[in-house]
Image (cartoon, rainbow, N blue to C red; front, side, top):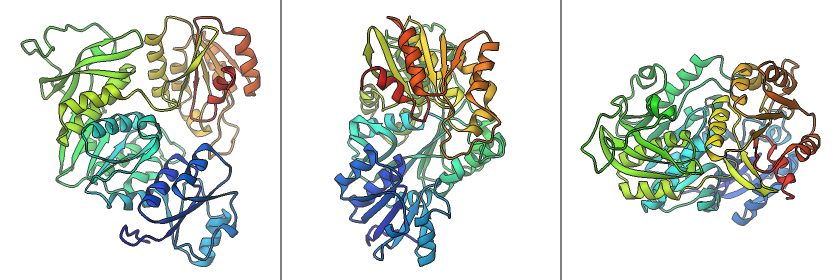
Length: 483
């Protein structure tokens, strides 16, 4: 395979440069002196921003975009051999590599390469850890799968020796990386258009953990089922984190035993890092006592809502502390993180109605978002959900309905196909009928216009509207707000 040499910048062409990860890697290489060009099917804000890095992007893909001065081409998982640019590279004998292989090679540019993996929560946890590393004056390079306001986008190029990035399991991409440190947040059934079953997914995460060197660190959710199967054979230091069942259930906790000013107490000994004395403010943001190896370490206050973000923050704090980051930087970093775009993002208010947008597209994510909404408002919760991919919707059909029933009102948009074709096995109408049978107030409309017209007639002062999904459902809330 073609090897990228940071000391020998060449011309790299990105086929499908407009994706959140591809654009970040392209900008990173441009900052290192590489000549970078790319193409995408349509214009977008991300594509427009690449011009600021001196990257020329062709809108529309064709063989003519592959010029004689290109040394290597990078492509996304959505690009297939029949793509005209891919085919032209093959015809010319031009080296090709996929996005994951490129990210893996970039890992080797840095002394410390930190990969955040998990079925969900990667972007939020990567962003939390980003804020901690910034507070710790490590000057990191960061590639995050969302727009993080603190770094002005999805990429930060630092002068330090650490590289923080998201590590996705889809198509076993993360097995091409070279991490020195890892976080594994959770392992659940997803991407079943690629993986055969949950056991194959677990095996993939196990192989990811085995990539770590002896002097590395693995921070892993101690609540993962049969955890020892994932960590078996790992030669580096392993630290676990997790929450007690009492904390996850939202039950009240006694402050005396776990407070820094108390006399110690009986903490959940299953985990190296856990949270005690969790309380939420009026916006659902948590404060808690961070417990490190059975001892109170700090009082933590989060800038984002939800019990799931307590768990995410534990993962970020645990890795940072293992890397030698000062506890004050951990505290300040977590407090200063106020979220990324499309992660429980408040879009605005109109006529006393609050509009939130969230990227949740897996049942566990939906459940976490709707539970967070319950702490955020006392009003009626409307969930406008756009399922993402036919394979995921079909495989997790029952889990989706169980999660969506947490909303007071559910409105379903057609499935966002993404990389797939409709095989006729599942539709949003099916989910709607399932919810109705469960006694949930649910409706399904074939277009965004019809959804918006229904909402305009139905929403009332005090309601909370959440547009939810990994597709373009965000447009519904933005249109209602007049954007």
